[in-house]
Length: 202
Ligand SMILES: O=C(O)c1ccccc1NCC(=O)[C@H](O)[C@H](O)COP(=O)(O)O
Image (cartoon, rainbow, N blue to C red; front, top):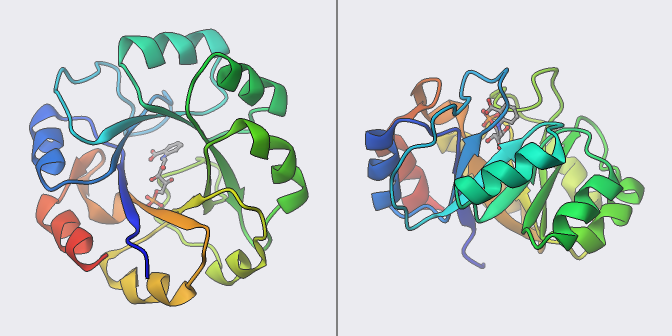
């Protein structure tokens, strides 16, 4: 089976960030959604090996572009109800994009098809009023109905003891696993040893 990539989302404190980067995650996510407890108001001045993902929820295009450039983000994760035109304009401006679909009991494949030409990845998360970081899983069985070619990230309540179940899914388009609140000591502060254990098993 192919090696799944790892994204650790919701980082903020410079020391914690540096310690995380040393264990080699592929992607590190920063939340630019002011209502989140993981909101990053002062972007940490740290050089990272991992690709930096900026997470936005229904933010203005101007603000997204400003943050992408000032923080030198490698990828933008659009976690709200951003339209196809919104996504297209960011792609045309040259950004690499992850479009999130928040799900419960079905995959909105028809809707996703219209976004597919303009994104690099999809990400499935559990639908909740807070958009993300809920620690709740959705029914992963619905992923077996996914027939698009675009690779995707799996997220929503993933914990250390979920690895066997994730591997057993055997989904060809599953590209990366996204972990967050189940690995926290408090919001935006990760338990590095627990993340390390997860990465070694992935
Ligand atoms: O983490 C947040 O606070 C958050 C808030 C609003 C939008 C997105 C957010 N997180 C983005 C992520 O990619 C999370 O890793 C994903 O939602 C899964 O989180 P969890 O269920 O805690 O593992």
